Image (tube, rainbow, N blue to C red):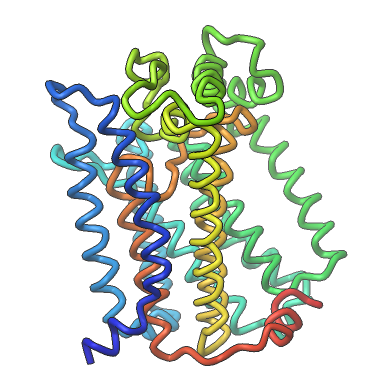
Length: 371
């Protein structure tokens, strides 16, 4: 039994993830002084080991119980309660337990993928009925509002992208796509006037014109673009990234780790990381195509959307193409909550391969993309 579980793990996926993790670790090691009390490198090693353990454990579990509505409702409401609780603890995005911090929004993103996969899998035949777009939007709206109230604009963006991406792959019509986009504009306008904090508006202003205030709201992205640009083609070399070592680059171990990496490894190294991310997404979509039912297929697609959203927002932020939102880069950024969530999602996906079936590309396109 254990041998079969090991065989169904996509080892090619693991092979593509390992150098991404290594890139993050060596970057942390290069700018962290040996006497530092915050040894990000050592702590991240522990989180990586725990995350891989979770990945392999989850790949052995039969997760067909996640198709049960009562299970998903419990998980969704429990995490919503935790997000609500955070609002009453000083508007923080995490629970601090001293030796580690826990961000429930990371788990909520994965549960939202499961909830939407469950919803659309049962209604894929009638998905062109626009009511399902708004009902599914309600599921995303609850955590989105709770996250905005913390406030955590970055995670709210990811939740919105997950919902929009899963609506698209579920087979929405072109007319409904237009209506969804219009709805998105209306929702954004509402949040702008009634929900966004002043500093969040400042970040969006800075996104439109990053050079307007480089000493305040534009400082982070200004230093990040300097770091990326100074890496040129081949980089300054490991341990020679001046922006991170001299502390011009803010939080280089987390939000801006791509900029710190790009400064040391240059365009060539950055291209390699982007290529590895593309291969990771390819393997996730391949596993999704083998799903035994619509639920497994949609879940795999949702996991791919989850990763693509994080990659797009974080790297776009580092390049000055997206507002600064504090979103971690998968497998590279320091932290335990997001890393554990990423490997939980992949572990569930590997478990679902036990009941996989060959899927025809044309059938997949016609059923889920509305071709």
